[in-house]
Image (cartoon, rainbow, N blue to C red; front, side, top):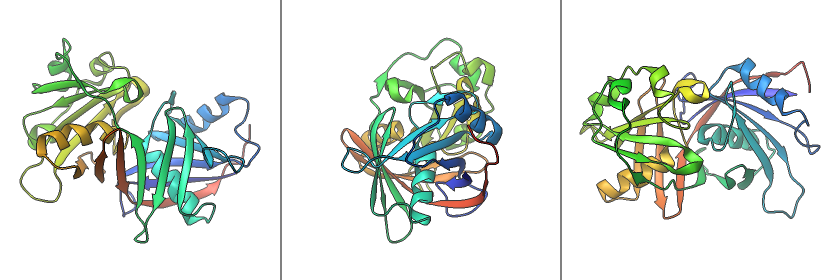
Length: 273
């Protein structure tokens, strides 16, 4: 089986967010899901995506699952982008690809310039008081806190400015107890003009202390910042050490996420299920 590592939400290798991608044949996923979990643990990336083609004529073209090193997750943007990149660059798919996933049907559209646009459900945002211990765990005082709904499962935490987001050095053990999946810290961008907002994503509860670029988080960041900035078309910078740009387009109940990807490793998995 071919297995690849793809850097997502970047046009340069060794930046953006690396994801593992393994494509199965039409026979589908192995019966033992623990095999998928072990592969994800072996790669030790924030997510590894597994996909297989579905019979023609249905609501989706490929089945898709995502695993962190420790658990299966409901939604992942960067590993979906990585999977779509592999499908298009290998000729396994053309045009728009429909994925059947835990969170419903997702689509990916390829553009002539090599970028890809994902169509994801917009996360519902519900204001809530800051949980006890949040400021101490993050090391910064929140301006506002929002729940992002069941599918994303994060706390969206607004901070005073970009510098505060970049300076965070969280207590990951403390953060792990505060949300189902993780904490997204965000602020308006400093006035450079290169991007509209900045974020960082911390997910110790699912085995990822800091995620380099989190596509699913932008389904919450897009409505949050579109409401504040008065524009539906925005660009977000996730300011991790690797960093990456996500172009967001709010379409009501759906959010479009656009970015690029680069394959950096292409090898063979020598053990099977």
